[in-house]
Length: 220
Image (cartoon, rainbow, N blue to C red):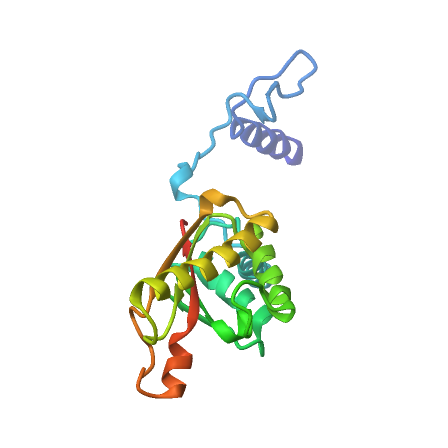
């Protein structure tokens, strides 16, 4: 009776497996799977990978650090200009040069006295050190255009002021070219007493108006 039950159980179990066998009784495989066995294939769009939370957090941190330090990373919503402005502020801290960033455009406001001192045609040594650091960043962040405009106060003839302000802008542009910045990226102009930022009726206001504005425009 026990022998009969054992044979019956073995027959039932064998009947539950649907596959082909070779002459030795070993199931025939196709790839890694028995040919006749049925498998449920999940559509690709329904597959969701859920990495470990710690790994996911580390991946996110790595992405953020890379995006902040790499100018060639995809830039969106003015991020390229934000990175450059951040580095410029670090390099120009305590130099007297103001750095402003708005909507993908960076303005460096350089007092004429800081750049030229009392000399009308030669850059101050201390200022060239700052300008050299600016040039290094402009070479690194090369998808930018640089517009340099000179300004004066309202004392003196209009034409003389415009010529003097253009000359100063050109001197700074020439220095940047000497540092390896392509001429195609640089535009200069002399605005004279136009667009004052200070009151020309006061000495302090006139000093504020004597300036060079270097505008860095991101093309990203």
